[in-house]
Amino acid sequence: MAFLARFGAPVRGFLEFLGDQAHLVLRTLRHALLLRLDQMAVVGGLTKLQIRFTGLDALWLIVGTALLLGAVTLIQAFSQLSGLGAENYIGVLMVLIILRELGPLLTAVLIIGRSSTAIAAELGSMQLNGEVDALAAHGINPYQYLLLPRWLGVLVSLFALVVCFDAAALAGGFLVAKLKYAVTFGFYMDSVRQTLSNRDFVATLLKVLLFSGAISFQACHFGLRIRRSQTEIPQAVTKTVVSALVAVFALDGLIAALFYF
Amino acid sequence: MIELRDLALDAPDGRPLLAGLDLTVPLGGNLLVTGPSGSGKTWLLKVIAGLECPAGDRVRVAGRDIWPGDGALGMAGRVSVGFAFATGGLLSNLSLAENVALPLRFLGVPAAESQVRVKSALVRLGLAAVASLRPHAVSAVARKHANLARVLALQPALVLLDDPLEGLDSADRAIAQELILAWSVDSACTLVIAAEEPASFSHLEAERLQLSGASISVESP
Image 1 (cartoon, rainbow over the protein chains, first blue to last red):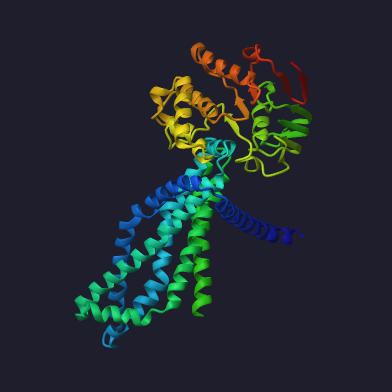
Image 2 (cartoon, one colour):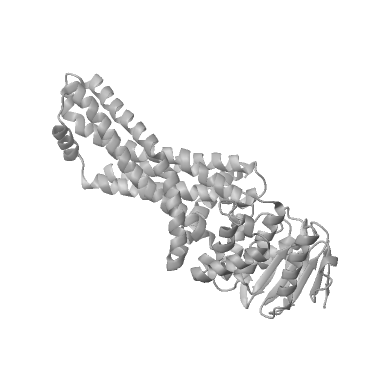
């Protein structure tokens, strides 16, 4: 029995966590549908702020990372496949490695590092300062005022950043291809276009939708659970990062299996 | 306005604060909750506001079940509540004026009317000069008054004040007391005050609820 109890407790804890997350998502969506037109202006303003912090402020980090990654991917590919007509596989390599997998995944990881930590810490300190109580007491629905704009902001930012990441990675790859094999831009883009399919677009959109939910709702969940002291804030931030990373990698594997297996 | 039936409260650490409280406060009525520090005054206010869940049994505000129920979410947009917190409670990324205006914006009060109400509340509480500053940049007294200004601008049907006079000097105390007196005689407003020292509110005509460990006493005005 002791063995079963030891095994059962974490399983039960995990299932409770999943239940809490589902509850948070469903309540936020339900309250989003109840928003009035005048409230949308307030929520829209907060969403714009979140887009600025999560999207605009991270743009150069994402573009720089993607440029280097695109270039390094083709440098490594050419070093291994030289003599085997590597230039013919440029499009396949870029689509398989960058656009399908690393683009959405690395962008999500960078957003977890920059924004989910900030959201968890901000909501935690709001909770300790009585700000969440003050909102609820004065008729300001915390699902509409706190959760919805953060999720929408992360969703829009993640989508825009994935597009920028993919574009910058393709640019980095093109620079290497041009310098190494004097590949023209037309040939490079044709090669990428031929490998890309509608399925890739749908898979990327699904990833953006699910990753943004996993990142923002887990940050909100851990941030809003803080009740007593400042020392809970770093613990909540750590839990947010670990939990969001696990969720993003698990969702990525699931989508890859669903679309490409 | 407020109906408490067989109410039981536990502190966050699980310690029982009170049990078996039956109380009704009519619309326009006043209730003064007193007791030593840690006796559950603030907790009771938060339970009435729907912010904390009681250990048992029932809380109704304006005819709506708050507990068991959705708490503050069940009242949002239906019952207008103003809560002046003893500490904190102001959004740190907004100025005092924006803090006062936020509930009005969210509840759909027209912009022009909202501006008038915010300005008049800030002036009445002597906050006009610091209205554009954020809470961290003003004194504790100004933060306390900003909590009252938010309640004043909202013109709520239920006013909950947690130790509203604590830490105020005589001039600031007079401003707050004048405001509290106006709420207490307003027949459209139900007033609940939690205070450690009841002497400051001896002039108010209010039902008195004394919390002291396990014992509860209710005294009519």
